[in-house]
Image 1 (cartoon, rainbow, N blue to C red):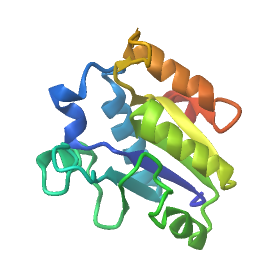
Image 2: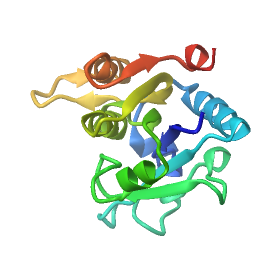
Image 3: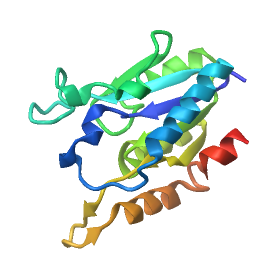
Length: 180
């Protein structure tokens, strides 16, 4: 089935830097790699999304080591790469057109951060009419401060983002259940 693409979002070296903060799901990269290998083996389309910041002090600013893909998850020359400047991989990138031209109607979304680029991209994809699946154990979030100063740990942030998506915008599954 080539009508279901794997979207690997922001799996860049900068996500591993200490200044990114404490995160949940330390096994997420292994699950992303497992799914990536399955997609490659079965000949399904893979899209790698990379955040390229507009701010020179960001680890994701072009030319910085943090903007590069993590070695184990780097795209093959035959895999499509989308560069974005905001959380949503559909905003000003041409991703929708690339998918539509290829007849891709369903997306499996993995990566980081669950409450940022994963959630924003999954919401947009659903609103654009794609069938969206988000893999809970192949994504992760970071600790986050609330507007009132309350601290939310990465586990809470991750769980809430998945709850926001489940049913309304996406089907949330584990890698094991997706792969059967």
